[in-house]
Image 1 (cartoon, protein in one colour):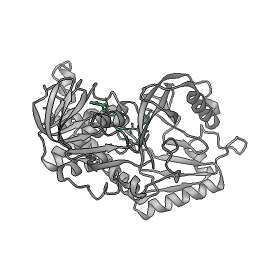
Image 2 (image 1 turned 120 degrees about the vertical axis):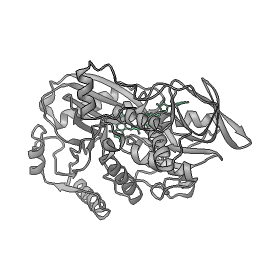
Image 3 (image 1 turned 30 degrees about the vertical axis):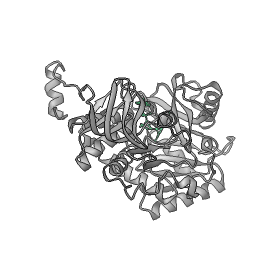
Image 4 (image 1 turned 90 degrees about the horizontal axis):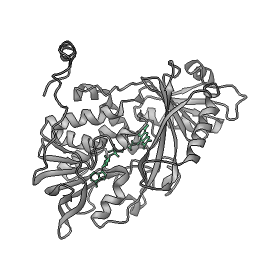
Length: 419
Ligand SMILES: Cc1cc2nc3c(=O)[nH]c(=O)nc-3n(C[C@H](O)[C@H](O)[C@H](O)COP(=O)(O)OP(=O)(O)OC[C@H]3O[C@@H](n4cnc5c(N)ncnc54)[C@H](O)[C@@H]3O)c2cc1C
């Protein structure tokens, strides 16, 4: 398969772009593999990539029920950050950030990682204190963080209303300069191509419909394209975790599925060159390379597997947008869509062996798993290949909910819709 390079771009441009090869093969599934990864989202694909790259495990199939990018990896708002408070999360997401920083080079695929910063706005002195605490914790752990004054924020984002006359005046904010955005579907395609090049079979339109078992042990899967055996079966299906695990007879997990919506406006001239989050509700926005404002808010707040949302949250998100950017009231909304998020009880993920022998589980990404894609695949691949967690995911166990060792970043308690 050809390397992507400036020279290849030039050569193909001069010859009518007819010689580009498909980025990955379309193999028929084999009867058996060493490892099956269920779910061709960002996490499943990155897991397959790191299994091959870091552990030399290449007899691997990724089974995807639809097409690559049809799940949350192709539906998210692409914010990437590592501005967490609690050490297990900070370490894990900062490792992800480091992988992001070299990802285009590593994959030989431009994932358009743009370190334009993520700014969390504070709307009261108490909230600013809270952000100062988080920033201090980040800096203690070697992560970049800066507390910005209102004057610095209004210089950075002149289009935003930072006057004291607004309903929720801005008191300052916490900036992570190395955070930013990446092109979501390029991440899926880049990992797919990287895994395929190392021999992984990526099988689209192949829905897992059940598990093959020998007693308790998982020995393979039944699919819409026949039975496939495997020594190890890894589940990375994000919002569908409850459904897929039910096929293995596991019907109680510390996960709820909720819809999360996102929105994009018509293209504007550049007005916003960072990612901003509102502190008095749940709203965040960035401007895409095409000029559209990309934004989102809270989950819809009821359990669902539907990839579409309802109007009340649309109204709430628009109101929050206008509270910060009243001058953008005339901008037209182009599209909205929804994805199904696997909300965990403490807002932190699960990357673990089990819960059955021969099975491995990756889930609980809530609405923040895109930024985790590199580290999640890296750690899950380690867990699968070595049958034990990497030190970075050692805390993300399934039994922490039984043992009471929660990683509750927001301090909200076991209420998934609040994380
Ligand atoms: C609107 C929205 C905005 C978001 N914004 C952000 C953000 O700004 N930053 C951030 O970090 N995160 C964000 N997220 C969260 C992030 O997108 C997810 O946490 C992450 O993408 C989940 O991992 P994934 O990519 O592997 O999931 P997915 O892409 O959903 O992959 C799971 C795959 O499993 C497949 N599957 C399901 N069942 C089966 C089966 N039975 N057999 C075979 N395959 C199956 C699905 O078809 C799907 O392709 C957002 C999510 C949404 C919905």
